[in-house]
Length: 101
Image (tube, rainbow, N blue to C red; front, side, top):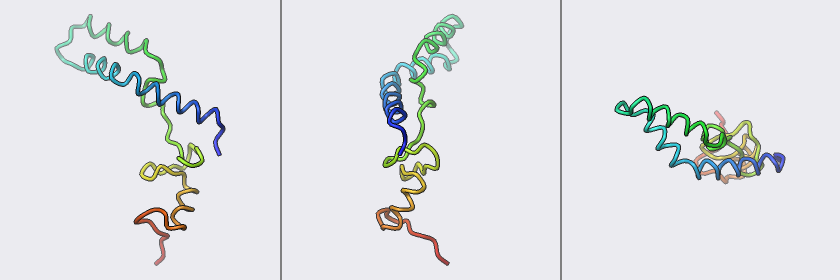
């Protein structure tokens, strides 16, 4: 089980990402647009830099839904490798079973 403070930090980051998602998208579109004047582009870059760091989606970390483990996660299932194996052996994951040939 992951440390509680790490799980809480991730939850806080997810909220921050959702809160600023529209504003970040608007600023990024303004920066990318070819018709934007250099002054407007500079102002947009500065505004983007003033947003909280944790508002960036790349700061999020995939974690196991059961244990909170940060490494060895399968994004398709949202589980860590060990919990995915346990769920597979118990037949709880549709379409997934232990390989044997």
